[in-house]
Length: 357
Image (cartoon, rainbow, N blue to C red; front, top):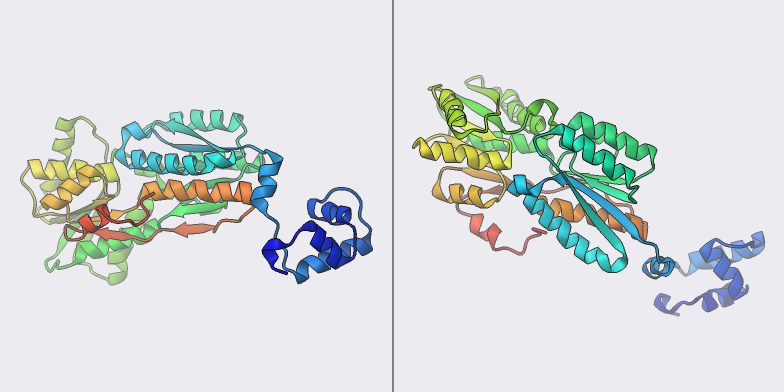
């Protein structure tokens, strides 16, 4: 008898009990004698019975609601890419009555994050996918979710002490180390490397600090005292003031390279260096955003590390939907590869079928 053709009637016949008894055991309803229960369970083990969870869940007509909380995609192309991944995943799960509700907060104001997370929590979703970029505020909110028994998946920024259902993203400490290794290639003379956090305050942004720590750790472990590192928050948003701040940085004759920890900030710094006619500095940043790709192809940016926010959100919803719908436990950590993009291989990434969704 093939497993795929096994019916309740067949199980009852093999166990020597009634169809009703098997039904009560499988669906955990009604009373069953201990003897009959053991007969059914023994038969199920022998035939390696696995219920059709999709059919069972559809039969309950249960509707699942997933709240996704991300920065406003209109503020940053990185989050616009993340929003595309959300829409793709939502379209896939809509047919199974898994509905995705997206909530946007202001990328630059933690008060917006606080207000939005509280309003999302009040709607009592079945699960949450969130980018916890404001560390302390996110920690408070996720403790609330745990108290309310709302499962959550986090992406982009890991907060391991909160023990999410799953984390999707990269090892950002290792990401910083990779950036440092790329920065050190061919550097024979002593010098300084700057780590720039552009338009985001690093103090409450663990994802930026992890990159910085990894970068600094590389040179410390390699015991290369001839290379110094410095870290700065570039907070100016007005073009003239921003230009002046970067010009002040460039006055350091020992400056050999700049590592930008944010995607949008990468193109911002590249644009300033291009305007100043300074292409000698090595510039390393993040992500295959259109402006970053232009600067990479023009030679202003030397390397990009691709974080693939589109794929992160897609996987986050997939993991949570599978958990809610099929009771399938996701991996505790789903680490994406640290993809190094150069002028020579960028076109193969842009035109490839690799998971960009």
